[in-house]
Image (cartoon, rainbow, N blue to C red; front, side):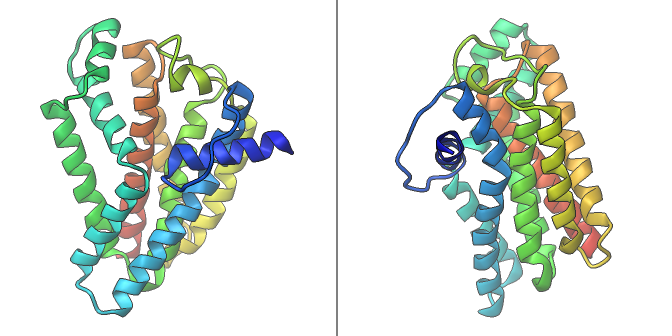
Length: 252
C-alpha cells in the first residue's frame, strides 16, 4: 500500500502542478507512478472538461474557449510536455549522432523544429477542442489526457532502454510490463466508447494515437539509443493531440 500511495504521489507531481508533497523516489516507486499516469491524466482532463463546459454554458466563442482550455492544460503541467516535444523534435531534426543529438536536447534554447512542433501541436489541440460538440467535450478531454499519459506507460515498458545513465529516462525505463500497459489500454479504450456519437471511433482514436506514440519511441530509440524525459513529454503531446483530433473528427 505504501508503494501504491508513493507512486500516486510521484505521478501527480510529475504530470501536474498540484501542490502535493514529494515522497520516496526510486525505480519501484517510479514504476508505480507510470501505472498511475493515465488516471492522473483522466482527472486533469475532467477538470479541463469542466472548464470547457462552463465556457460553453456561458456562451463563450468556441475558439476562444478552446484557447483558454488548452492554455490551462499547459499551465497545469508547467509546459513540461511541450518542452519535451520541442527538445525531442530538435534532436531528431538535427540528423546528428546519438551523443550530439542528446546534447542538443539538453540545451535550454528551442530551435526552429521545436518551435514549429509546439505551434502546430497547440493549433491542433485548439482546433479539436473547438470542434467538439458540447455534449462530448468532457469525455473527450478525459480520454485524450488519459491517453497522452498512457503513452508514457507504454514508453516505460520492459525492453525499451534509457538513452542516458541518469535522469528521468533512466529512472523509469523498463519499469512497466506489457500486461499492465495493455490492461490500462483496454480501460481507456472502453472509456473512449462514450467520447463519440457512434461509439466505435473512440477506441480507434485511442489505438491510432498510441500507435503514433509507439512509432515516435521506436524512432527515438534508433536515433538516441533509448528514451529520455523529453521523449516522454513528446509522447504525451503526440498521443493526446492525436486522440483529440480523432475524437473531434469522428464527432463532426
